[in-house]
Image (cartoon, rainbow, N blue to C red; front, side):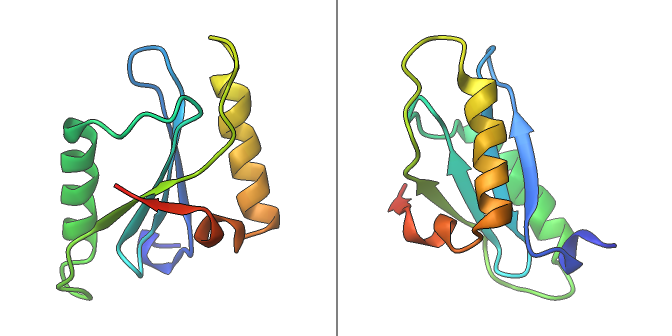
Length: 106
């Protein structure tokens, strides 16, 4: 299966000892960003993901990737981020429309 064939690509990412989740919709060139501490994505991460999406979609899309901040539960302490990321993945797999209903703008 090619990346472009997938509806969602899940990328758990750990910048600076904190887990966040990227959910990419390759066909739509949309990146959903979920962070249990409600931070915005860093510019380096956005640049890398945008470049990868442009390369993979070079033949199929001229659109630029768009980023969406997804409203998600906030972790209370300092160690629950990994649990929250796994929970987000499970919820999106079982209820795919949930991600569209919780979109905020970056």
